[in-house]
Image (cartoon, rainbow, N blue to C red; front, side):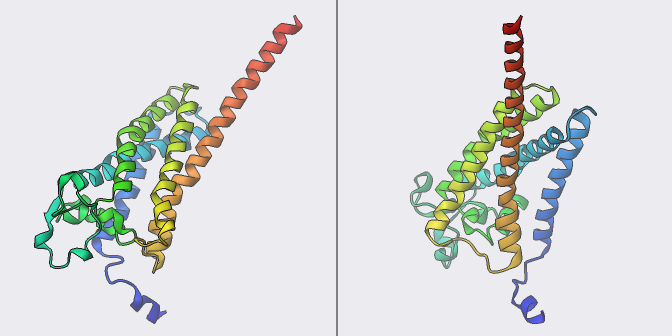
Length: 244
């Protein structure tokens, strides 16, 4: 046990890491409090869970992933100022028209959101720089999926049945995005991933990413069931009219 602990990175549970994890819990708590204010007591358990999830999802997209995009577009350092540029997280060649800059959270200095992303980049180094696949997905996530998640929360609170269609749309987006995020790594034998310890592998890479697989699948199941129930009611009503 002692040898295993000694093999772990010394900054595995440093202050920045703990604050980063706490911020995620704080966002979840905010989503839960929002559900208490927005939903009435008659809201079903499944829709209450999905309200909390989509509120959490929207806040994650706007606050955390929005900050990632900010650093990918506005935080940079000249490569000439770095003694070993190869040690940096990758920035795509000719990104934004420059070949002599490194972009991303790694260039964000003491900014707390940059430091948060550098914590996650310990497990997946693409999130420390400016990876084109990740940025392309995050643009859709922040500017499309985020607003849709807010619209879903509004629809659940108003008991709008059309919300089921939006839930299927955004869940499909999340599942597709997860596949596109990790498929390049699978094809390169996880070149940018570090699964050398429990925290990186099972917390950062597996747990946090599987949330956006398991819950979207659950959302699709709930929405599809509601849609099927609506069609069943319509079929019974149609059959009733024919018998008269």
